Length: 298
Image 1 (cartoon, rainbow, N blue to C red):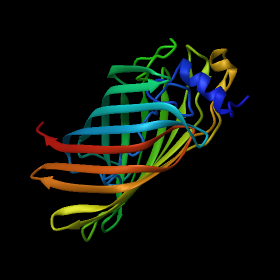
Image 2 (image 1 turned 60 degrees about the vertical axis):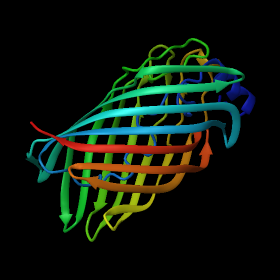
Image 3 (image 1 turned 180 degrees about the vertical axis):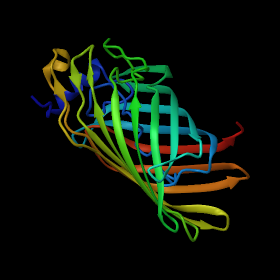
Image 4 (image 1 turned 120 degrees about the vertical axis):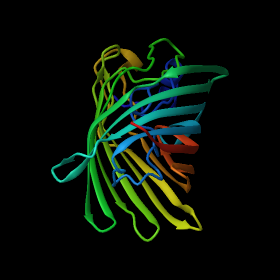
């Protein structure tokens, strides 16, 4: 049974919304925020060393049932602490990199005259195996695997704001970058497979997220359009009694914006603004992404 009626979806949302009703399990955030790798030359690994990235996502959104806006507003401020280790090893001809990400999240939800917020650590992400190849001068390809662990707060209490999904998520990704003549032309595709939430017996459907960047160096600044597409590929499955035994509709999200990158010595700073032009069964609105990456000494 799909919850296609707006009233049915609102009943679920009122009972358990969380940081986002994402057309995955109601009230649980995505494994990776949409647009997380905008502005990043994802196809190429950096030179050997240890790096720290601070990735900040400021989201101001409404919840949509189908393509209809509901009276639920969600503001999220997320700061991901990400560490990259590039030891200089070559595997299968590609440069090896490992990553570890700890998100800190503040979420504020306004629904039906009630405001709820929550602050804490979200689901931690481990990326143990990533390889990058230069297949032509200036053209790079990367692929890797990630595991998202259920470390964020999750509650089945009515009106709870959840910072995690209470389920493991595995993902594979492929990135392509053209980095020559002042260009950063990059596309990053991520495919996510979720396990079942043991507390609700609900399993979210598979999802595809594609982030893209088309930025050109102009006078020491790299500027250009950026965007993303999120599409839920398979249906959710509900084997329990939560949410009236129903499932949410598939999510779709399409956003376009503008990105700007500037290097300050060894520090790379990036800021992007993106507006969602198409939203179905998920959050939609405006987001600002502010990212910093700096090399660390061993």
